[in-house]
Image (cartoon, rainbow, N blue to C red):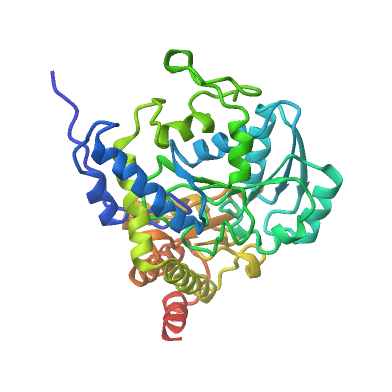
Amino acid sequence: MTSSPPLVPPPRLLMGPGPITAHPRVLQAMSQQLVGQFDPAMTGWMNDTMELYRQVFRTANEQTFLVDGTSRAGIEAALVSLLEPGDRLLVPVFGRFGHLLREIGERCGAEVHTIERPWGEVFDVEEITSAVARVRPKVLALVQGDTSTTMNQPLAGLAEALAGHDVIVYCDATASLGGNELATDAWGLDVVTAGLQKCLGGPSGSAPITMSPRAVELVQGRRHVEAGIREDGDTARGTRIASNYLDLAMLIDYWGPRRLNHHTEATTMLYGARECARVLLDEGLEQSVERHRLHGAAMLAGVQGLGLTVFGDQAHKMHNVVAVEIPDGVDGDAVRAGMLTDYGIEIGTSFGPLHGRVWRIGTMGWNARRDAVLTTLAVLEQVLRQAGAAITAGGGTGAAHEVYAG
């Protein structure tokens, strides 16, 4: 009997909306040997990771840790732990991932209210605060950067505008953290979750989360300890959180000094998440945001230099991804396939009303660098020529060089 061959991934440059090519330091960290989940070395690394992500999120929140699972696990952990059946949830929807927040809220049994903007636009702070005043939600759930549209929802000033409204503010920063400004405490965000596979330069599989003391009080008001590990004094409080695995009250006990057993920590993912934070902080938060801005600007100028049209309100585009309208008469999937098959470069399509209408090209994490941008633009030009598109010869790399020249 012949066994399957060893796993040898083909060489790829992942220039889509995520996942991206992992940083070499992250891959090296994830190759290290396992230790037990309560080994002093392991619990020390857990504490270290908490402190690193406080810096990444720009917060003093004690309850800052990892949810084992993809970024969606972090989103769902936040909402299922904050929302009880019948609670009001307000979701401003301006892309696919606002719809996701709405669906998760509905699955939690919440009374979900939405306000919507066309894909490619964002909300004014006044629109959001007006809806909060009208709906009076327990939780306001927003996406900062929605990769389906590439838009970046402004959040600065929201806390001041919401003063006087008793509302918990949750933010999904999966696509934006590390490549766009995010200031958890300064912006008055109560809960923020993210993932590794975008600007943080790691693989999908771990979801950093931070919670304000106000959010922690709400979650702890629903604390129930499992019967098999319950001790004297572990009194049940409030309505039990509907998910065991994503129960933030139990995760607080697991990551805290008590180390109350919940699950077996995903050791290799913790190694990776910890190294993602170290890479980012070694570079500097402001420097990382500026790097993403620079290379995102070069990619934007490059696709425009080829004569292509970009989608959406460019004044509110994320630094790390651009949506490019597929030229008339060009088979968008064939272009993507050609770039992947012939050159090993992956770019993305989109969802819903934008599926087949735009490509999404990312410049994030380890791939937010000059050579990756210029190579992608040169290859895109060649494949578009083969597809018969009328484009400006050399316009892509030329425009990008102008951005780099300042």
